[in-house]
Length: 164
Image 1 (cartoon, rainbow, N blue to C red):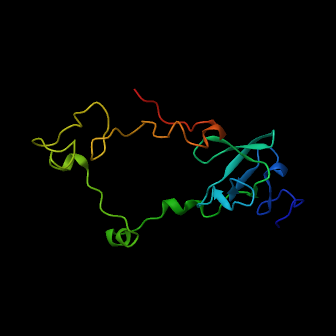
Image 2: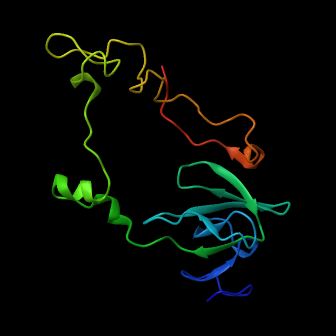
Image 3: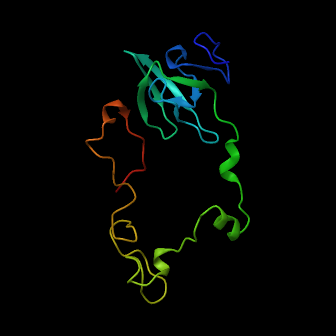
C-alpha cells in the first residue's frame, strides 16, 4: 500500500516523517518526488535513527548517518534476496559474461607494470602503504571532496578500519 496514512507494515510505502524511530526502510528518495536512490540492492536497508527539524536521520547500509527530507518517501522493511552476494559463479566464463575481467596480483607483475612487481621469488609489498597500479595511495585514504554540496547532510561518516 502506498499512502500518507498507510500502516507501518512491511512492504508499505510512506513518507519518512511517518516512520517511527528504529524502523528499517528501503527504496528511499533523497528529495521528495525525486525517485528512490538509497538502499535498493539485494538485502539492503537503512534504519530511521531520528526525526527532527524537517529532516529524518538515516543510518545507511555503509554505517554512515545522513539527513534526508522528512517528506521523502520510503518502503518499510528490507530488500529481499539477501543471499545474492553468496552466489557462486562457477567458472571463469560466467564472470566474463558479466563483464568481470581477470584479477592479477600486483606482486605477480613486472616492476614496469606495478609498484609491487619484480624481485626474485616471492616478495613482500616493500612500500609503506598500499598503492594502486598507478602509484596512488589506496586503503583508508579519504577521497570525499571537502567542498561537496551534500557534506552538510552527513551527520557521521562511515566507520572504516583503523589506519596505523
